[in-house]
Length: 118
Image (cartoon, rainbow, N blue to C red; front, side):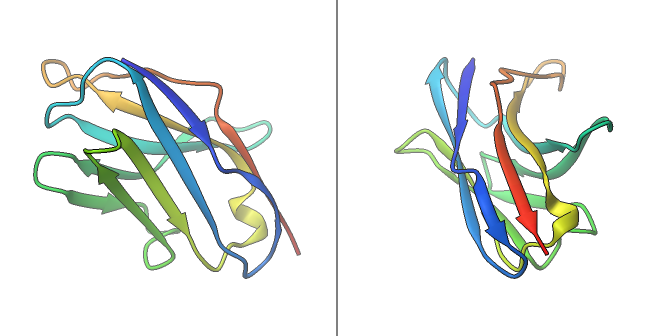
């Protein structure tokens, strides 16, 4: 599967952004998909995941209540609605899809940069 992220930008603290992740190649059939982020000098961390089959979602504590992950099967697009952004949310955001067989994430794109100024 190949994925392409978009929607990042430079915003102020308290603003909102919606990230998109389009499945440009391959098929999503009940796979778990996730949003991840990587800040400068740090590793890539999970932000939120969704089971596309039943839309069950999981969030990391630092974004729960502010971010919403969703999957539009008709558009083959994964979204991340981010509200009340904080400077510590500044990072490059990536999406990925997990193999149903191995649960290993793949399809990493170039990511989209989110920068939140204080």
